[in-house]
Length: 458
Image 1: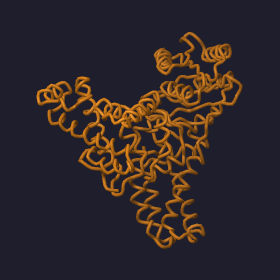
Image 2: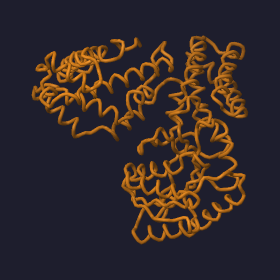
Image 3: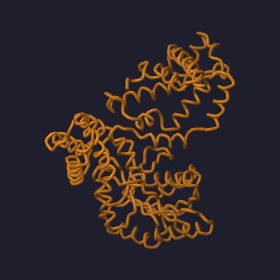
Image 4: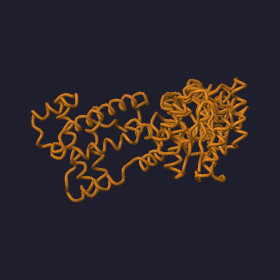
């Protein structure tokens, strides 16, 4: 997300960071470029005009003139205004109601609403430690009810059965009664996809809302529709009192116009971003972190949170103890490290949260990510084709064994040889990590592990 906008803004703001003093004249071209970058990202025109005017007013005011580095202050202003545009801070779900707290999900057809219900159920269960019951009030699509039942089973939450002969209001009320009897903390009510211009369908969801009085009414919308996502959310909000927005399919949106337009147009906060198909691919929306990513400054806080949630602490501790005892870092350990990274969303997910590398734009980074993902996938396939004895002691792998492993993994003998060589490099690095100044020594040795034989220069 934001790849195009980040590349454009990074190039544009680079021209102004060296200025000794900012005036209306010397930031005019930069502001024009910022405006064009936002419009190309499909941000709504009124939002762009307002944003650029606010940046201009602050940039040529006393705030910058007192700064020792006006150019850097200008970038800081752009970042602050981006945060303000998207909301000052993450707005959490209002779950402090008498249980069960009811959350009503609304949206258009095909926006990923039912999938989002499953993701949100997992989020509430794992991160908020809540018991959750999900129910489908979509009486027009039997497959939706079955899909939600399957998702509930996958994420380990309760499912309340319903069928197409019932009325949506009756379904929702029955689910809430069940939740009260079983002392469930949160009820998620999925509804049928509908257009805001469909009066009959809008009356139906209004009736459901009035009957169950949800603490949260979330509008689920596809981020790839750009500023149309914000306009649709506004139309729904005019008919239904929304409390927040969930942007889905964000991983497929290179522009980011929806994220920058929704709050300004609807007045409602974005509460979550759907980042992929996996049931854990739902992230709380943090405007400050998103602003940093847009300006190529990375999002290290989210990266830390991601590591805490996905890394297997027990395996990490076992590996640490193993290395401290002087036992070697074998290919099974190497495979574990690759799998841990996959659990964190893969190499690409890590790279997009790190600060931009000077001189490398996001499209180039994307090529690097693709090459790295392919290489790590190939490594895992090769290791899986080995016997347990070969994984524990790669020195026994002869030429004939390499041919067998290559055949079993769909790779070349040279690829197997390269993996064994890279593993030896990792072994040396792991030894250095356990000694003094370990991290610095490890970073020096990392170069050989990446496609092209080295890390890009910072």
